[in-house]
Length: 296
Figure 1 (cartoon, helix red, strand yellow):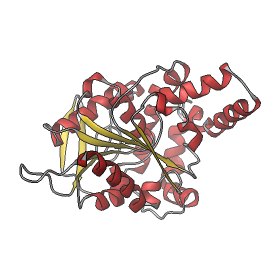
Figure 2 (cartoon, helix red, strand yellow):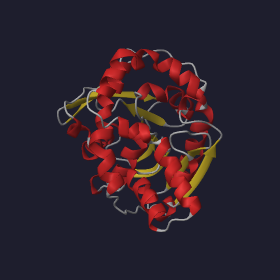
Figure 3 (cartoon, helix red, strand yellow):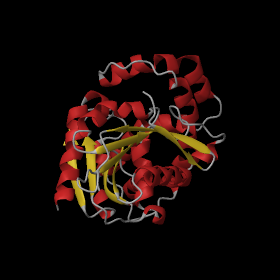
């Protein structure tokens, strides 16, 4: 997938990919910005973007350390504040005069929540479709199950902690990097097929994407889970919940309405990588949400 352009954000060059024609003064077209997760690149959005391109100007970018974007050194360079700065640079480049409709998946969704709550992008985001809750919400979700424990809440806590244990393994030095370099990178398409039932081609950047993206976990995970910050936004939010998601199960979205009262919940009968397995349904959920807001 060839980038449309590269833009500069601090010391990082970000690869931008676009679908569909931009709007004009006579004919407005909503701008939809798609933010991918780990260990993906913007290529994960291709099927969704093609579906959206008929009615929207669609933008996806390789986040820092992924795809054809450059990779800064050190985990600190992947802190959420830097990712929000990158997103702001993308929005400034592709839609300087009009708020965008933001869509985030996996770590892209975590970045999107951070951007939504940031004064840096106030007024620049018209709506947000999130396929995961924020790290702060997940941290609060865990805390609440310990603050008022019941058998059900403790079972949910233990189940989710075990399901997320791979994230703690990513905190270890060297071993996760070696895992990506010595085999996981080459086997990723096969593993994704086993998990999601989809066939994907190997990406030349897959090993590097997995390797550099570990900084996302190391810079952000523990501080937010241990000390979650309650926040609120009045921007319209659509939760895109995958009923068969092994990594972000539906119960993790419980209580998000406290953070985003202007909320819609849409469920898809799909697994974690629904953008690959169900691109049409994924795109339709975005289209319906965006069009309802544009018409209003």
